[in-house]
Image (cartoon, rainbow, N blue to C red):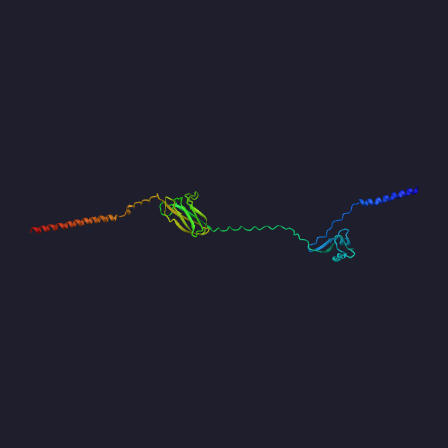
Length: 284
């Protein structure tokens, strides 16, 4: 009886001991290994490891994949028994390629704004033409002589590179009270023939064609005169009394007439005595 009881107690004790050892081991989680990467090389290529709490020479060499001989060889100040290893100590692990250099961004340079380019010279000119009513026919425009509409003015380059035709107008500029001219813009510099076709009902009082030389940047102005066909010549005013013309032809005619009458009378006088003498001779 006592032996059976002892065996039972012993079996229970063994089972409790077995479960006590296996259950905590199964319950404890598998430790996670810390992730580690080799330090990045410095700009000069050196790979430096900074000693942490709990490090030793064997763990540092194993962690970075080098041998103890390499660790000691790269760090002559480190004792071969690792007795002077301290936290924060910098150990040279090797020399590699320099890390990619990332420059620190500085202030952005202020863009330089180039000065505006000068406007290229167009190399053109302008020709303005006026057709005026030459009221007095003196071929010179006066302030009282208005513009004439309906004329056809042509501007043609002597080489044929430019040719334009426009009509004249009779409008007046309200600001300047001057006639509005017919203008040709963007005309290239050169020599041109300028001709005017006078409208119906007018006669030209000036030349209707001119040759004109113009230079770039200039404005050339020309005027042509025309007179209405319905305008009659202005009668001449009589000369003042003090300066009256002497009718020499009339005086000369009268003198010749009087001279002729005198010669006739003289001839008649000569013929009468001759007749009387002939009569007396016959009586004898």
